[in-house]
Every structure is written in C-alpha cells, then in structure tokens.
Picture 1: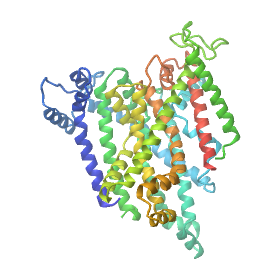
Picture 2 (picture 1 turned 180 degrees about the vertical axis):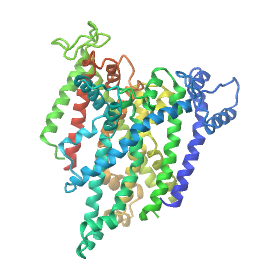
Picture 3 (picture 1 turned 60 degrees about the vertical axis):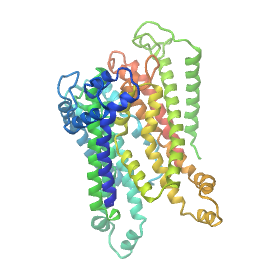
Length: 286
Length: 258
C-alpha cells in the first residue's frame, strides 16, 4: 500500500466517524413517522422539540466518540458492555475457526497442488452451501446419535461449520499461488541452476504465501462475523450473533445499531493495520 | 459455454419447480388445515404451526428467492457497468484515486452488517431488501468494471481506434464495453451464491420478506423452535437451498470450461 493510499484509508475512517452521527438528522429529513421515537429507540438519544440539527449532530458525535451507545432494552446493561461480552464468546469460535481454515486449507492445497486452479470439482458446491444448513444437520444428527449438544461439543461443531467455506478459500488461494509461482521465470531460473524445489520454496517463496493469506484475512473475519448467528443461534452460544438475533426479536435496536457501528469502525481499523503490514512485507506495494 | 449434462437436468428440475411455484402462488388459494401434521400423501412436507402446507410455502419462498436474486443481479449488473465506465471515462487522476480508494474502502467493510443496519433504520420488506443488497454489492462491481476497462485500454485495437480519431465515448460504447462484457457477465453470475446467502441471512433475521409471504430464511428460523418435534418444518427449505446451490455451482462449474 502506497503512503497516500494509507492516508486515504485513515481519511475514510475519519469520514465514517463523522458521517455516522448524521443518522438522527437523516431520520428526521426522510420524514419518518415520530422521528423522536425512532431516534430514541435506535440511537438512544432524546430529541427535544426545536433542537437544531447541528446540536443533534454534535450530541451524536459525542456519544460515538465516548462509546456511549445507550442501554440494551432487553438486558438493561450498557450496549458497549453487552457487545464486549458477546464478542468474547464469539471470538472463542472465530479464532479457532480461522486457525483451522488456514491449516486445513493449506494441507488440502499441499495434497492437491497438482490440480488445475481454474476448474473445480463436482463436490466444490458443498463448500458454498450456507452454514445454516450444516448447523441444522449437525444438531439433528447429534440428537439422533444421542450426543449432548448442549455441552462443550457445540463449540467444536460451531468451529467446524464456520470454517467450511474459509477452508475452500484458503485451498483455492494456495493452489492459485502455487501455480503462479511454478510458472514464473524466477522459479524456472532457480530450478535450472540446480537449486532444489523445496529449497526454492523455503528460502524465497514461503513469504509470498504469507502475503497472499494476509490479503484475504480481513474478508474471512468479515464473513465469519457476518454469518456467525447461523451457528450461534442453533447451538445457543451466547455470542454476538445470538444476541443479535435475540435483539431483533425483542426490538433491542440500540444493541443492534451499536454492534453495527462498532463493527464498521473495528473493520476500518483492521483494514488500515493489515494495509500497513502488507506495505511493510510486500515489496510490490512500496 | 459448455454446460454439463447434469446442469441441463438440474435446470430442467428448476423450471419444473418454477412452474409449480407459479401454479401454487397464482392459481391455488392457500388452504389451511390442521396444525403441525407430519408428512403424508396429502401434505408431502406436513403442515406448519398455522396449518399451511409446508411444501407449498417452500415453493412460494423459492419463487421469492429467485425474484430477489434476479432483481439484485439486474440492478448490480447495470449500475456496476454504468458507474464503472463513468469512473474510468471521466475525471482526472486525483478524482480517480479518491474514488477508487473510497470503493476499496467500502468493499472492505462488513456489507451484511451494513445491510442490516440500513434495513433496521429504513424498515424491512422485499423492495428495501433488494435496494439495500444492491447498494452493498455495487462497489465491488464498479471496481471490477474499472479494472477491466483500464487493462483493456492498453490493447492494440483500442490504440488503433484512438489513432483513427474516434472519440473516447465511441470507443467505450462500441469497443471497450463489448470487450469486457463477457468477463463482467461471468463475474456477476459468480456472485449468485453471495446474494443468496445474504438474502437468506436477512430473511432469517426477519428483515427481508415480511409475513404472510414465505421466505426460506424465515422458514428455517421458525423451524429452529421445532427442530426435533416437527423436523419437517425445516427439512424442505434445507433441501431446496441445497438444490439451489447445486444448480448455481453446477452452472458456474460449466462456465469455468468456457
């Protein structure tokens, strides 16, 4: 990432922080019925009659900067505490799922490295099936087999289900990168000088797999975050996804909106960090 | 495009399902019978908690799923092409750098959460879900079109056309866009699983299609409460989702040989 690209990312993060507090004004501007009630119910802000848009904006900005996202309607706890507790549970699934995805994807890639990176296999579609389908089958089969799915095994199920598609992504990326490398002039040149394949990979090319893996790490985390309620709801894991589903059922909008805002800012920061690391380790980006 | 034999078979099956769906939605009135009947000859997938036939509801939901998919695909295809071409054609380097960084930034945000965020603020429903899904998907479409156009501009035939004195607009309209169209179509089609997944997620959370209209995501959610006591409530949506993905990936698999 070039320096000005990094500056752009930081600029957009600041813009995001400045745009989000416009929401109460947008709600009023769109002519929503009872905007005071909607703003109180979603952004946890009291709007007094005749308040100027600028004051409203400043109050929303202050709330955002101090992480004052209100109180959860269903639990009575502050939203930021609820999000923290939920994320703690969710990370118990997401982090092992990420590790499993990279390890298993790479392993499958190594075993099947001779295959073409373009054409897929007939059973590839399994990786695309929504994880909710797997969650239901795991749950149903566990019951039929007499396995107590309310025990710690539900975390194992959740990790496996959450990593099905990411394993495929890592595997595909590995195969694609491997074929790019073995067809490169650099590789052919070193091979012709008598350097062994394993030595070429060990000394020069392992780093490129690292760069490749880093480039979609954020996408995998976003995927897992976005669909985590597909595993947490069926297995009743009290993580952010489960809280999210309950929040929608109970009209706990401060919690949902708070989680969305925190996630957007969190991923923007992650994006900048990953971009910075890439700029340091990838010579093509300097 | 070389499409394999099983794809034709699956597509045929899909057409049959669409015909049955249309028949059930438009010709047969919804009959309510006894609640939670297990599958039998009269009700192939039993009845739900309101006494509706689960099979008919599943096919209805499948119809809505397809309608949503087609609507989103059409919107993102046309707007992605239009906006991508505009970015490529107009503005200086500074504008392009700013816009591309903005699109890159948007593409790295959690789109599903943004979609949920917007749907909660503006209200759920089929129409809103289509618009918001399209808005969240378009940035990457724009990026794809822009990158393809920028690469294509270095092709010798484009340089030749420029040397003939053709205007920039004419080159875009008659040469560059037709040149990238095939790749763009493939790229757009490859996003079908993503769109279906996102729509499923929105419906699962109750922010997509609203009752009394059926949706696969909501049927799955309702079936969760009856996971063991009334398994037929969720088994038919699961089978249909499985079938849908089998068809989609089968088509994409055929496309890979193209």
